[in-house]
Length: 270
Image (cartoon, rainbow, N blue to C red):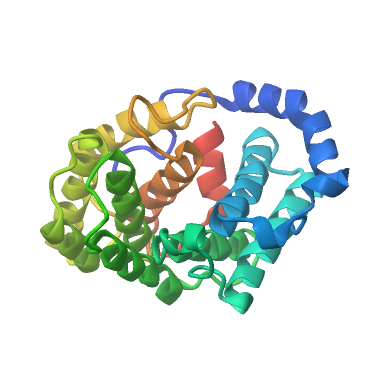
């Protein structure tokens, strides 16, 4: 096994303190009628963001206390309710404000759904995660979609999704299409290096590349802090933190490519 599974910085106390300070807010969110998942459902222009918001509440609770099952379970259920209803009703290209995000909005809803299912104890759907890349490629290829900080961050969502799914070759294909990320250079370079190492190892894990793991951990230690909000450029910090944690675990420490979700949580919080 390459390197060490425990990184040098500890954020366990900070995550616990954050949870203690947020408990009353979580109680309000879970009990207030206007904050229910489907309040004003027909007016929601971004159900994928709603699903991720609920999922990130659950993740932040796990980081503060992995044994907590009350709030975290409810937020996972709420996240699943939103994403699954969005797919059942196929709302992603209905209405002008949703249509302009299509199919990028569907890709984020897919990842929110599959992560929530996995954290709820269900089987992780690798094939569904690969569709995140397909939808993202379709979206960025549209004539009216620019290549700015938001779109670059969204494209890296897709790269991370296929790495989570264990497909380094597909991830390499994504970088063949777009390899310049002026707003997100550090993450893009890091993921490209990981892909190169994974391809050299024929996709076998764990990767035996201590220098790359050290580089990865420097980035990981920065973004797993509770105070990290994404830096100067647009970034969904919660999603990035979680997915980088999954990728680190899956490629550097998993012996067969399977994901130990509890270990990912521990790696992020400690």
